[in-house]
Length: 241
Image (tube, rainbow, N blue to C red; front, side, top):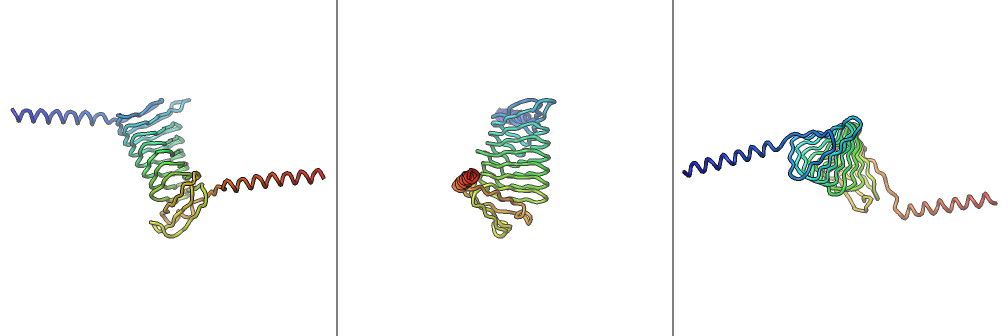
């Protein structure tokens, strides 16, 4: 009798496990949709239809691989994604959730800010990524990909090669070609919100592919404006005389 009960319980457990395994499926979006808490997908594709841009909002759930195609738009505010890819002129906006690998590929566009967490960010093949916030690990640019950094917490390193460019916007920017955890140097300064940063570089070609865009201090901007006004008045007075 006891043996029968044990067998019955084991069968029930196996059936539940099989049902859960079947719940993780593939999904393709050809019109606007939502991925939310409780959803579990293995592979997700987002595609445009003729004359319309498909928009998918992810607020929760779990996805192994999500790829945005054509000119579709994916907005991620929550949930967990193992790999997310923006390609073929699509756009991905990440302001929350956790992503292990994020790729901007084949003219794709990626924006990252707020509470996003990305362990690995790769930008390549004429794509562009802008990081304004969030927490990130490795950031790389290659094959004519460009990365714009204006904020965020970057805890690992920057790498650029093969015609990739990383633009950094901020105050008091400094670039050193030696030292750091990887021996390739580091960059430091302040983001636009005055948060200080110090980020390691990795790879022999990275240092030369880091481009600084120093933002003038507000006081400096004010002096420039005042100087321009005074110069304009002086020229006006000369013309009158």
